[in-house]
Length: 297
Image (tube, rainbow, N blue to C red; front, side, top):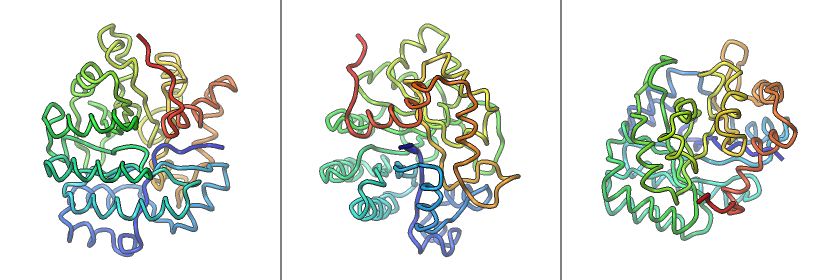
């Protein structure tokens, strides 16, 4: 069974009119991204059909880097309902806006206490306006460590693909997090903004030795050779297959999101069968279901 470690899903009220919904909630960054890019809006039934067609049996419902905690709370309520209704299909992550202070920490603690949520994030400090070195985020990381769940962070490459709503993320922040919290289970989205390529630097390689990189939106960002290149740099055991569904990953070829083309890209990457299985499901199983290998010394 393939696991998609990076998907998004929204309620019908959002699908009907995404731009109006987002503006009403003060989520300007989200509106800019989803109304100016290759975003798809499949129904829940269409989503399951598209997943089943290519053997994607389970998906992480990644949260969003909302600008308001009220929006994060709303998405968490949706995600809990959907995951409880179909736990074999979905593993939800907690959305949170750390600028909400104690309320944000309490929201994460309450969500993880349900046993339904299997991670925290996606978070993006430069959009949400919080300090990764601040006390609130420190408390959120502490909860993640206590509950043994991963923290998913959006990372933008410092140079590359231009699109409406693009906001850079200082890569040094993620190196600092890896150095400061080696016990945490970090997942850096979108190939970590290219950070695997910096792992040839000894300091960065050490700092990120416990960090995973998801492949969300890969065909929109990188040449297909990226799969094998990152495997050679950090190992297949650090790569998590993710798509950013329901993005259309090949917008010139697709009118709706899907999995066939990106899975073909993975299977043409030159992985061994064992490596392919590790990337497509093995790593995700360990993170989501706590089948986690001991940390290196």
